[in-house]
Length: 419
Image (cartoon, rainbow, N blue to C red):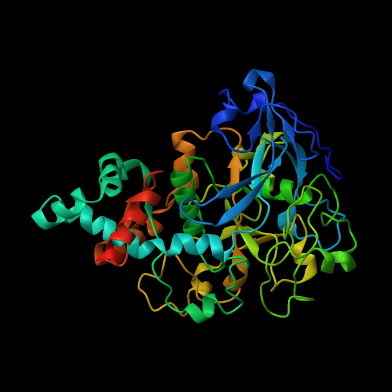
Protein backbone atom coordinates (compact mmCIF):
# COMPACT_ATOMS: atom_id res chain seq x y z
CA UNK A 1 0.00 0.00 0.00
CA UNK A 2 1.38 3.42 -0.97
CA UNK A 3 0.96 6.02 1.77
CA UNK A 4 0.10 9.40 0.30
CA UNK A 5 -0.94 11.41 3.30
CA UNK A 6 -0.12 11.47 6.94
CA UNK A 7 -2.28 11.29 10.00
CA UNK A 8 -0.95 12.92 13.17
CA UNK A 9 -2.40 11.29 16.24
CA UNK A 10 -1.27 12.04 19.77
CA UNK A 11 0.03 8.86 21.32
CA UNK A 12 0.00 8.27 25.06
CA UNK A 13 3.45 8.90 26.57
CA UNK A 14 2.81 5.82 28.69
CA UNK A 15 3.76 3.77 25.65
CA UNK A 16 7.27 5.16 25.79
CA UNK A 17 8.04 6.27 29.32
CA UNK A 18 8.21 3.68 32.12
CA UNK A 19 9.18 6.08 34.90
CA UNK A 20 7.22 8.72 36.73
CA UNK A 21 8.61 12.20 36.16
CA UNK A 22 9.15 14.53 39.09
CA UNK A 23 8.31 17.96 37.69
CA UNK A 24 10.29 19.67 40.44
CA UNK A 25 13.48 18.00 39.18
CA UNK A 26 13.00 18.45 35.45
CA UNK A 27 13.14 21.75 33.54
CA UNK A 28 10.37 22.24 31.02
CA UNK A 29 7.72 20.46 33.12
CA UNK A 30 5.07 22.19 35.20
CA UNK A 31 2.32 20.66 37.31
CA UNK A 32 -0.47 23.07 36.30
CA UNK A 33 -1.82 23.80 32.83
CA UNK A 34 0.01 26.99 31.77
CA UNK A 35 -2.66 27.84 29.25
CA UNK A 36 -0.29 28.18 26.30
CA UNK A 37 -0.66 26.47 22.89
CA UNK A 38 2.81 24.93 23.09
CA UNK A 39 2.08 22.98 26.30
CA UNK A 40 1.99 19.19 25.96
CA UNK A 41 0.02 17.21 28.56
CA UNK A 42 1.69 14.32 30.40
CA UNK A 43 -0.56 11.52 31.60
CA UNK A 44 -1.42 11.24 35.30
CA UNK A 45 0.14 7.77 35.48
CA UNK A 46 3.47 9.42 34.80
CA UNK A 47 3.10 12.07 37.46
CA UNK A 48 0.97 14.41 35.38
CA UNK A 49 1.90 17.93 34.44
CA UNK A 50 2.75 19.56 31.16
CA UNK A 51 5.78 19.83 28.93
CA UNK A 52 6.46 23.48 28.16
CA UNK A 53 9.14 25.49 26.34
CA UNK A 54 12.12 26.32 28.53
CA UNK A 55 15.39 28.18 28.38
CA UNK A 56 18.49 26.23 29.35
CA UNK A 57 21.77 27.85 30.30
CA UNK A 58 25.24 26.36 29.94
CA UNK A 59 26.49 26.30 33.55
CA UNK A 60 28.86 29.09 34.62
CA UNK A 61 28.11 31.07 31.44
CA UNK A 62 25.55 33.54 30.19
CA UNK A 63 24.94 31.40 27.10
CA UNK A 64 21.42 30.04 26.80
CA UNK A 65 19.36 27.94 24.42
CA UNK A 66 15.60 27.42 24.09
CA UNK A 67 13.88 24.04 23.92
CA UNK A 68 10.41 23.49 22.43
CA UNK A 69 8.18 20.54 23.47
CA UNK A 70 7.01 18.23 20.68
CA UNK A 71 3.98 15.98 21.34
CA UNK A 72 4.21 12.26 20.82
CA UNK A 73 2.35 11.09 17.76
CA UNK A 74 2.41 9.16 14.53
CA UNK A 75 3.34 10.33 11.04
CA UNK A 76 4.34 9.06 7.63
CA UNK A 77 8.08 9.28 6.99
CA UNK A 78 9.24 10.09 3.48
CA UNK A 79 7.64 11.31 0.25
CA UNK A 80 4.87 9.79 -1.89
CA UNK A 81 5.83 8.55 -5.36
CA UNK A 82 3.90 11.43 -6.91
CA UNK A 83 5.76 14.21 -5.04
CA UNK A 84 7.63 16.77 -7.08
CA UNK A 85 11.45 16.67 -6.74
CA UNK A 86 11.19 13.34 -4.89
CA UNK A 87 14.32 11.21 -4.76
CA UNK A 88 14.33 7.43 -4.57
CA UNK A 89 15.85 7.43 -1.06
CA UNK A 90 12.73 9.21 0.30
CA UNK A 91 10.63 6.06 0.08
CA UNK A 92 8.81 3.86 0.35
CA UNK A 93 6.78 5.82 2.88
CA UNK A 94 6.35 4.22 6.29
CA UNK A 95 4.28 5.13 9.32
CA UNK A 96 6.44 5.87 12.40
CA UNK A 97 5.43 6.41 16.03
CA UNK A 98 7.17 9.23 17.88
CA UNK A 99 7.65 9.60 21.63
CA UNK A 100 7.41 13.12 23.15
CA UNK A 101 10.59 15.18 23.22
CA UNK A 102 11.94 18.70 23.37
CA UNK A 103 13.98 20.02 20.45
CA UNK A 104 16.14 23.09 20.06
CA UNK A 105 14.18 26.10 18.86
CA UNK A 106 17.28 26.93 16.82
CA UNK A 107 20.40 25.25 15.55
CA UNK A 108 23.33 25.16 17.99
CA UNK A 109 25.12 28.49 17.64
CA UNK A 110 28.79 29.42 17.84
CA UNK A 111 28.03 31.03 21.21
CA UNK A 112 27.04 27.58 22.49
CA UNK A 113 29.54 25.39 20.66
CA UNK A 114 32.53 27.58 21.42
CA UNK A 115 31.87 27.03 25.12
CA UNK A 116 32.66 23.37 24.42
CA UNK A 117 35.65 24.17 22.19
CA UNK A 118 37.16 26.51 24.78
CA UNK A 119 37.26 23.77 27.39
CA UNK A 120 40.15 22.04 25.61
CA UNK A 121 43.00 23.87 27.37
CA UNK A 122 41.21 23.84 30.74
CA UNK A 123 40.54 20.12 30.44
CA UNK A 124 44.21 19.48 29.62
CA UNK A 125 45.23 21.30 32.80
CA UNK A 126 42.70 19.36 34.86
CA UNK A 127 43.92 16.07 33.42
CA UNK A 128 47.54 17.01 34.13
CA UNK A 129 46.76 17.98 37.72
CA UNK A 130 44.79 14.78 38.24
CA UNK A 131 47.83 12.77 37.11
CA UNK A 132 50.57 14.74 38.94
CA UNK A 133 48.63 15.06 42.22
CA UNK A 134 49.11 11.33 42.78
CA UNK A 135 52.89 11.64 42.35
CA UNK A 136 54.16 15.12 43.20
CA UNK A 137 53.96 16.98 46.50
CA UNK A 138 53.68 20.38 44.78
CA UNK A 139 50.68 19.16 42.80
CA UNK A 140 49.10 17.69 45.94
CA UNK A 141 49.50 21.07 47.64
CA UNK A 142 47.96 22.84 44.65
CA UNK A 143 45.01 20.43 44.67
CA UNK A 144 44.44 21.00 48.39
CA UNK A 145 43.91 24.69 47.62
CA UNK A 146 41.29 23.91 44.98
CA UNK A 147 38.27 22.40 46.81
CA UNK A 148 35.99 22.34 43.75
CA UNK A 149 38.63 20.57 41.68
CA UNK A 150 39.31 18.12 44.50
CA UNK A 151 35.62 17.31 44.86
CA UNK A 152 35.35 16.79 41.11
CA UNK A 153 38.32 14.40 41.07
CA UNK A 154 36.86 12.41 43.96
CA UNK A 155 33.59 11.90 42.12
CA UNK A 156 34.99 11.62 38.60
CA UNK A 157 34.10 8.47 36.68
CA UNK A 158 35.98 8.31 33.40
CA UNK A 159 34.82 4.76 32.72
CA UNK A 160 31.20 5.90 32.53
CA UNK A 161 31.13 9.61 31.76
CA UNK A 162 34.30 10.30 29.76
CA UNK A 163 34.17 12.94 27.04
CA UNK A 164 36.84 14.20 24.70
CA UNK A 165 36.93 17.85 23.69
CA UNK A 166 37.49 19.03 20.10
CA UNK A 167 41.12 19.74 19.37
CA UNK A 168 41.92 23.26 18.07
CA UNK A 169 41.00 24.02 14.46
CA UNK A 170 43.58 23.28 11.81
CA UNK A 171 42.31 26.07 9.55
CA UNK A 172 39.98 28.46 11.32
CA UNK A 173 39.55 30.55 8.17
CA UNK A 174 37.72 27.64 6.57
CA UNK A 175 35.48 26.84 9.52
CA UNK A 176 34.63 30.47 10.19
CA UNK A 177 34.56 31.46 6.52
CA UNK A 178 30.73 31.53 6.28
CA UNK A 179 30.58 33.58 9.49
CA UNK A 180 31.50 33.30 13.16
CA UNK A 181 28.99 35.62 14.79
CA UNK A 182 27.91 34.13 18.15
CA UNK A 183 24.34 33.82 16.90
CA UNK A 184 25.24 32.09 13.65
CA UNK A 185 25.01 28.30 13.68
CA UNK A 186 28.21 26.37 14.38
CA UNK A 187 29.47 24.30 11.42
CA UNK A 188 32.06 21.81 10.09
CA UNK A 189 32.07 19.52 13.14
CA UNK A 190 31.80 15.77 12.55
CA UNK A 191 28.82 13.79 13.74
CA UNK A 192 31.02 12.37 16.53
CA UNK A 193 31.93 15.89 17.69
CA UNK A 194 28.25 16.86 17.74
CA UNK A 195 27.45 13.74 19.77
CA UNK A 196 30.21 14.56 22.26
CA UNK A 197 28.80 18.08 22.63
CA UNK A 198 25.45 16.57 23.61
CA UNK A 199 27.19 14.25 26.09
CA UNK A 200 29.09 17.16 27.62
CA UNK A 201 25.96 19.28 27.87
CA UNK A 202 24.06 16.36 29.40
CA UNK A 203 26.77 15.73 31.96
CA UNK A 204 27.12 19.30 33.19
CA UNK A 205 23.38 20.06 33.26
CA UNK A 206 22.10 16.74 34.60
CA UNK A 207 19.61 16.48 31.71
CA UNK A 208 19.81 14.08 28.79
CA UNK A 209 20.46 15.74 25.45
CA UNK A 210 21.28 14.05 22.15
CA UNK A 211 20.96 14.43 18.40
CA UNK A 212 17.53 13.67 16.93
CA UNK A 213 16.91 10.50 15.00
CA UNK A 214 16.17 10.92 11.31
CA UNK A 215 12.46 10.19 11.92
CA UNK A 216 12.25 12.61 14.86
CA UNK A 217 13.87 15.31 12.78
CA UNK A 218 11.38 14.96 9.91
CA UNK A 219 8.44 14.80 12.34
CA UNK A 220 9.57 18.05 13.97
CA UNK A 221 10.28 19.70 10.60
CA UNK A 222 6.85 18.83 9.22
CA UNK A 223 5.08 20.17 12.33
CA UNK A 224 1.85 18.42 11.40
CA UNK A 225 2.03 19.02 7.65
CA UNK A 226 2.03 16.56 4.75
CA UNK A 227 3.36 19.03 2.19
CA UNK A 228 6.81 19.31 0.66
CA UNK A 229 7.77 22.06 3.08
CA UNK A 230 6.40 22.93 6.51
CA UNK A 231 4.73 25.97 4.93
CA UNK A 232 3.17 24.16 1.95
CA UNK A 233 4.13 22.98 -1.52
CA UNK A 234 4.95 26.34 -3.10
CA UNK A 235 8.74 26.63 -3.22
CA UNK A 236 8.35 30.30 -4.15
CA UNK A 237 7.64 31.02 -0.47
CA UNK A 238 10.85 29.45 0.82
CA UNK A 239 12.65 32.77 1.11
CA UNK A 240 10.34 33.63 4.00
CA UNK A 241 11.47 30.54 5.93
CA UNK A 242 14.90 29.42 4.78
CA UNK A 243 18.37 30.60 3.78
CA UNK A 244 19.25 28.74 0.57
CA UNK A 245 21.32 29.38 -2.54
CA UNK A 246 18.57 31.80 -3.61
CA UNK A 247 18.98 34.31 -0.77
CA UNK A 248 21.86 33.39 1.56
CA UNK A 249 24.55 35.41 -0.25
CA UNK A 250 27.01 32.55 0.28
CA UNK A 251 27.08 32.62 4.07
CA UNK A 252 25.24 31.39 7.12
CA UNK A 253 22.90 33.75 8.91
CA UNK A 254 22.00 34.37 12.51
CA UNK A 255 19.41 31.89 13.71
CA UNK A 256 15.71 32.77 13.98
CA UNK A 257 15.75 35.61 11.45
CA UNK A 258 13.05 34.15 9.19
CA UNK A 259 9.66 32.57 9.90
CA UNK A 260 9.40 29.44 12.08
CA UNK A 261 7.30 26.38 11.31
CA UNK A 262 3.97 25.75 13.04
CA UNK A 263 5.70 24.30 16.13
CA UNK A 264 7.91 27.36 16.57
CA UNK A 265 11.13 25.85 15.19
CA UNK A 266 13.42 28.07 13.14
CA UNK A 267 15.68 27.16 10.21
CA UNK A 268 14.45 23.59 9.84
CA UNK A 269 14.77 24.34 6.11
CA UNK A 270 18.12 25.80 5.06
CA UNK A 271 20.74 27.93 6.86
CA UNK A 272 22.75 24.89 7.95
CA UNK A 273 21.99 21.23 7.39
CA UNK A 274 21.76 19.18 10.57
CA UNK A 275 23.31 15.96 11.80
CA UNK A 276 20.99 13.20 12.96
CA UNK A 277 21.94 9.95 14.69
CA UNK A 278 21.52 7.67 11.68
CA UNK A 279 23.83 6.07 9.20
CA UNK A 280 22.73 7.13 5.72
CA UNK A 281 21.25 4.06 4.06
CA UNK A 282 19.53 4.80 0.75
CA UNK A 283 16.96 1.99 1.01
CA UNK A 284 16.51 2.11 4.79
CA UNK A 285 12.79 2.92 4.70
CA UNK A 286 12.13 -0.31 2.79
CA UNK A 287 13.51 -2.22 5.78
CA UNK A 288 11.09 -0.67 8.29
CA UNK A 289 7.75 -2.10 9.34
CA UNK A 290 4.67 0.11 9.33
CA UNK A 291 4.01 1.46 12.84
CA UNK A 292 7.64 1.20 13.98
CA UNK A 293 8.77 3.29 16.95
CA UNK A 294 11.26 6.04 16.05
CA UNK A 295 13.96 4.62 18.33
CA UNK A 296 13.63 1.28 16.53
CA UNK A 297 13.69 2.95 13.13
CA UNK A 298 17.24 4.29 13.56
CA UNK A 299 19.89 3.05 11.16
CA UNK A 300 22.56 2.81 13.86
CA UNK A 301 25.96 3.44 12.26
CA UNK A 302 28.20 0.47 11.53
CA UNK A 303 30.75 2.28 9.35
CA UNK A 304 32.43 5.68 9.26
CA UNK A 305 30.42 7.13 6.39
CA UNK A 306 28.07 8.14 4.99
CA UNK A 307 26.06 9.54 7.92
CA UNK A 308 22.60 11.10 7.54
CA UNK A 309 22.11 14.88 7.43
CA UNK A 310 18.81 16.75 7.15
CA UNK A 311 17.33 20.12 6.26
CA UNK A 312 19.64 21.54 3.61
CA UNK A 313 21.80 24.63 4.04
CA UNK A 314 22.82 27.98 2.60
CA UNK A 315 24.69 25.91 -0.01
CA UNK A 316 21.54 23.98 -0.97
CA UNK A 317 18.93 24.66 -3.62
CA UNK A 318 15.32 24.95 -2.48
CA UNK A 319 14.06 21.49 -3.57
CA UNK A 320 16.75 19.84 -1.45
CA UNK A 321 15.51 21.68 1.64
CA UNK A 322 12.16 19.87 1.61
CA UNK A 323 11.02 18.19 4.84
CA UNK A 324 11.64 14.70 3.43
CA UNK A 325 14.88 15.47 1.57
CA UNK A 326 17.85 13.39 2.73
CA UNK A 327 21.55 14.24 2.57
CA UNK A 328 24.73 12.38 3.51
CA UNK A 329 28.28 13.01 4.59
CA UNK A 330 31.21 12.16 2.36
CA UNK A 331 34.09 11.88 4.79
CA UNK A 332 36.98 11.18 2.38
CA UNK A 333 36.04 14.18 0.21
CA UNK A 334 35.25 16.38 3.21
CA UNK A 335 38.74 15.90 4.72
CA UNK A 336 40.96 16.32 1.63
CA UNK A 337 42.85 19.32 3.07
CA UNK A 338 43.34 17.80 6.51
CA UNK A 339 47.09 17.24 7.01
CA UNK A 340 46.54 14.89 9.94
CA UNK A 341 46.99 11.16 9.59
CA UNK A 342 44.58 9.80 10.54
CA UNK A 343 42.27 12.69 9.74
CA UNK A 344 40.57 14.60 12.53
CA UNK A 345 37.64 12.93 14.25
CA UNK A 346 36.41 16.44 15.11
CA UNK A 347 36.49 18.67 12.04
CA UNK A 348 35.93 18.64 8.29
CA UNK A 349 37.98 20.79 5.93
CA UNK A 350 35.99 21.08 2.67
CA UNK A 351 32.64 22.29 1.43
CA UNK A 352 29.82 21.41 1.87
CA UNK A 353 30.84 20.86 5.53
CA UNK A 354 30.70 24.64 5.98
CA UNK A 355 26.95 24.17 5.73
CA UNK A 356 26.60 21.34 8.27
CA UNK A 357 25.72 21.86 11.95
CA UNK A 358 23.15 20.38 14.33
CA UNK A 359 20.37 20.99 16.84
CA UNK A 360 19.71 19.09 20.06
CA UNK A 361 16.88 16.95 21.39
CA UNK A 362 15.93 16.07 24.95
CA UNK A 363 13.61 13.03 25.13
CA UNK A 364 10.85 12.91 27.72
CA UNK A 365 11.76 9.27 28.36
CA UNK A 366 15.01 8.75 30.25
CA UNK A 367 17.56 6.86 28.17
CA UNK A 368 18.96 3.64 29.59
CA UNK A 369 22.70 2.91 29.68
CA UNK A 370 22.73 1.06 26.36
CA UNK A 371 20.95 3.85 24.51
CA UNK A 372 23.14 6.53 26.12
CA UNK A 373 26.22 4.78 24.79
CA UNK A 374 24.73 4.63 21.29
CA UNK A 375 23.79 8.30 21.14
CA UNK A 376 26.93 9.76 22.75
CA UNK A 377 30.02 7.64 22.13
CA UNK A 378 32.23 6.63 19.22
CA UNK A 379 30.25 3.95 17.41
CA UNK A 380 32.82 2.41 15.06
CA UNK A 381 36.39 1.24 15.60
CA UNK A 382 37.87 3.84 13.23
CA UNK A 383 36.60 6.73 15.36
CA UNK A 384 37.66 4.99 18.56
CA UNK A 385 41.19 4.50 17.21
CA UNK A 386 41.44 8.06 15.89
CA UNK A 387 40.48 9.48 19.28
CA UNK A 388 42.84 7.10 21.09
CA UNK A 389 45.64 8.17 18.73
CA UNK A 390 45.18 11.81 19.65
CA UNK A 391 45.03 11.06 23.34
CA UNK A 392 48.28 9.08 23.11
CA UNK A 393 50.01 11.89 21.21
CA UNK A 394 48.86 14.51 23.71
CA UNK A 395 46.63 16.22 21.11
CA UNK A 396 43.45 15.26 22.92
CA UNK A 397 42.13 15.24 26.46
CA UNK A 398 39.62 13.12 28.31
CA UNK A 399 37.60 14.21 31.34
CA UNK A 400 34.40 13.14 33.02
CA UNK A 401 31.17 14.92 32.08
CA UNK A 402 29.79 15.73 35.51
CA UNK A 403 27.68 18.53 37.08
CA UNK A 404 30.76 19.42 39.18
CA UNK A 405 32.90 19.94 36.08
CA UNK A 406 31.99 23.60 35.32
CA UNK A 407 32.82 24.75 38.86
CA UNK A 408 36.07 22.78 38.84
CA UNK A 409 37.06 24.21 35.45
CA UNK A 410 36.21 27.75 36.59
CA UNK A 411 38.23 27.34 39.80
CA UNK A 412 41.19 25.98 37.83
CA UNK A 413 41.06 28.91 35.40
CA UNK A 414 40.76 31.47 38.21
CA UNK A 415 43.70 29.99 40.13
CA UNK A 416 45.93 30.35 37.06
CA UNK A 417 44.90 33.97 36.56
CA UNK A 418 45.74 34.72 40.20
CA UNK A 419 49.14 33.14 39.78
